[in-house]
Image (cartoon, rainbow, N blue to C red; front, side):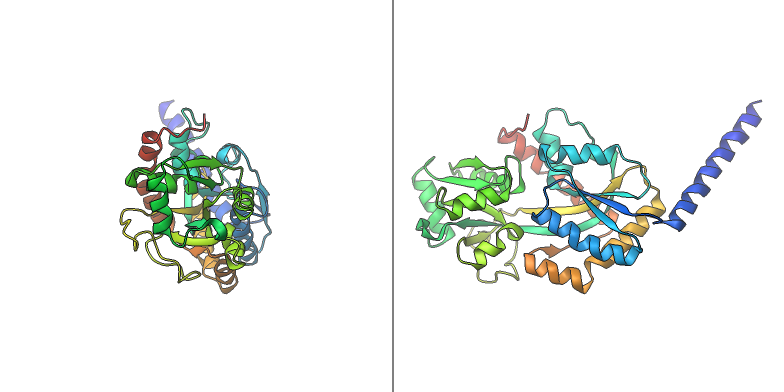
Length: 324
C-alpha cells in the first residue's frame, strides 16, 4: 500500500515537472501582463513601456502595461503576489517594494522574499538636489551651508514619505547634522510644480521626472547622489566630489514574477529582458529620460537586493519614518 502510494506521488511529481517543461517550451502563447505600481505617465511607467514594446517584438506576444498605483506600491504588490506563477504576470519592483516597505510598515501584507522571484535588474534613476533658479543658491555647498546656519528654516519637496528621494535626503541630514523640513507630495509631478512655481526652494528629484524642467532651466540641479557624474548632466557635480564622501543613493528598478513561476520561464524572461534593455531602441529612450540601464540576471539582482536590505531598513527605523 505504501509502495503504491509512493509510486502515485512520484508519478504526479513527474507529470507536474513535464507539464512545467511543456509550458516553458510553449511560452509565451498569450499576452503578458506587466504590472506597474505607479500611475501612467511617470518615469516607472515610461520605463516599462519602453522595455515592454521591445519585449513584445522579441516574444511574439503583446506585453500589456497594467498600472496599479497607490499604497506605496502595496496595492500592486499584493495583486502580483496572488497572481498565478505562469509567466504571464511580471512586475516592476523597486527599492521601495522590495526593501523600504519592510521597515516603513509594521505589518506588510506581502512578503518580498517569499512572494517574488527575481528576473533581473533593469535601470537606475539617478537622484539630484535641485532648486528653483531664483532661490538664490549658486551651488550645493551654499545651499547646505544655509541649511546648517538656519536649522528648521529650509523646506524640501519629495514625491512622498519613504520614497528613495526622501530617504536620500534623510541620509544626508543624518550624516551632516542638518535640520530641514520635509514636505511630502503624492508623486513627483506636483512636487516639481511647486518648486518651479516658487512655493518651495528645494527638492530631491530623479532624472527621469525632472529632466525636461532641468533642460528648460526651470529647475536647477546642484548635485547628484551618484558615485560619478551623470552622462546626461556632466557639468553637475556629485555630493561625493563636494566632500560628502559617504552619501550615495539611487532609485532602482528590477523585474520580478510570482515565486511559483517555473525556473525555465524565469530563465527565458531574464534572457529576453537583458536583450531588450541592451537593444538600441530602449537605450535611446533611456538616454532621453536620463535613466541608466543596469541589465542583470536573477542572481545579480538578488545580491543587490540583499545589500540594500542591510542598510536602508535600519536608516528608516533610526529616523522614525513610518507609513502606518
